[in-house]
Length: 552
Image 1: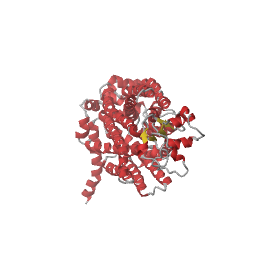
Image 2 (image 1 turned 180 degrees about the horizontal axis):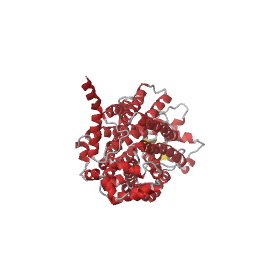
Image 3 (image 1 turned 135 degrees about the horizontal axis):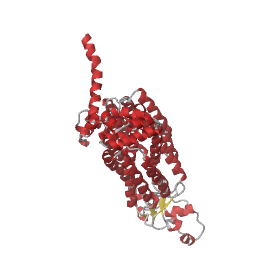
Image 4 (image 1 turned 90 degrees about the horizontal axis):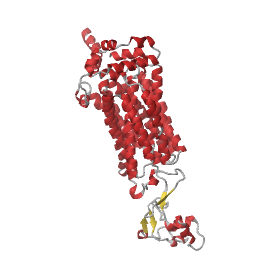
């Protein structure tokens, strides 16, 4: 545990940590816009078939008499199930008999209609352009829109798997820098994609980088911050996602063209790539992996920025070797994904933390990635989700310092699930109450995300931390992919999707009570540190019981 003492010497909460926080959290805000983008860039505008009488002035001029656009619409487009003009069918020939005041909407046969063979006309009053309108992802091709979303989430899953292991092997800062560049280049390229498959490919690469940025940002913050300030640092990190939700609504409200919107949210990452070379690599990781000279340089640099000149001069290789002899020898032991499941004390932590990550991704993305189904004003709804999330996460910080990690994790998951389950009892007529419960449930999930982000970093040693975080992110993305599919259960009962969305976090919250408490404990660097912490926890629990039995 010697690194905690070294970090206190060079400053675990000073000017360096403040600068690092700003440099890392600002990209998190923009990163959130990438994940929420298709609520706007892939919004489905009102549409109908292209027909000559309505959309070709020459054909209109050939019709005798004066007919209004509504009349042309009546004789060209049949009514759909909602008694509005059908979005996917048109009449083969104008049905002039429908203009008769005594005619009814049923005065035509299915044989008189055909699909939109000449394309569609879209309503551009809300968005001037979306990927749905550009590539006609409607009617028979409507399944391609959720496919694009699934491809994006699959990219995050693959990115979590690859970047976690890569960061444990090559370093946090190096992988983060590459992810910034990949997100900037792929996001910019997506704005100019000539075809839908090419667009999906670039979005996959964006999502891959998003997962890497999320993981490495949190890990760098945890590993460069003192024990007493870790919860504050990670809460500020997760607040970046909340402000990102509001930023997404604001930018999308001002930029209504999908390609320009994609460009606006991607170009800033070129700047992030440039300044990321200034960021410090995790000295904790450098030392544990035997890179003493690099670790010493980073520690001296942090001491200088924090105004610890005397400490900077006293830090030498001999001091590091003396202080971290036990950790360095243990850190050279091979570590792999198998260790997370097979090593004593780690298997249970891995399974339960992964379940908590899955519960968050499954429920949050299942509800939040289809804003058009939740309300008509998607700009306001997107902003509201972010605004409500902010006090929830600030409250989580207070609970983490008062109750601890384990109870806060359990309470946030259980309460969010109960809010969602309560919606199954609320009639559809009470739309405001249903929306309020849904937003409260999402806020609870935001609190759960804050807690699990901190908890995972504290549960696992430095040599396996990014692998464990990557596994958790994979579980969250796997849940995000499965979450939207649950809506298909609605054909069997309107309340079934909500029952599933609510039950998963409730059960996960109860299981989270089996995790050990990590509040105020120094970060473990090796597997042996984890085992030592567990032994001390067991002794502290059994000690009073032994004394009591002795007195009896």
